[in-house]
Length: 206
Image 1 (cartoon, one colour):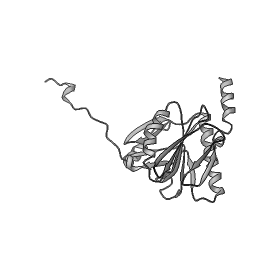
Image 2 (cartoon, rainbow, N blue to C red):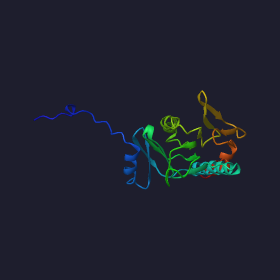
Image 3 (cartoon, rainbow, N blue to C red):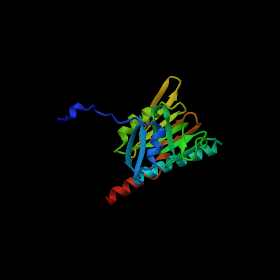
């Protein structure tokens, strides 16, 4: 009997729910980061560059200090705190995420992000600014979403307005990011503290 590949229909990968993904994620290799976008698992290597880590630290530190100064109930998280967006079958690991009801959804999960910051890496920049941004902007609680470039002073800021989402590209250290919904204002320079020195040192040691 002849069997032929054309006799079998092409099988599309199953679209996972967030709950199904969480079950599979328990078996993820330690060296990989798993995220779920539109029901499909996206794998990347764990860890990041020194500059990436520095910008994440700066962003979270600046936001935390500003929120505390204002007596805000909102909190900024990073590292392995997940953001679940069930409407898009998405579960992501934002570089920094701000929630104003931070302890409602369990020890490692958020569902109501008010602000998101992603530090762009060459290998994931296109994906982050297309697929992840599309999922983020459908989150009803989100008011501000920032994409931070590592190699130059440039932050793309998406802000929710009455007419939809507005993008601003901030390229001066004197520019100020207005975080709608959490009453916080952070100068662009605060995200890049020590970054120029780190770039120069890494370049000279290459």
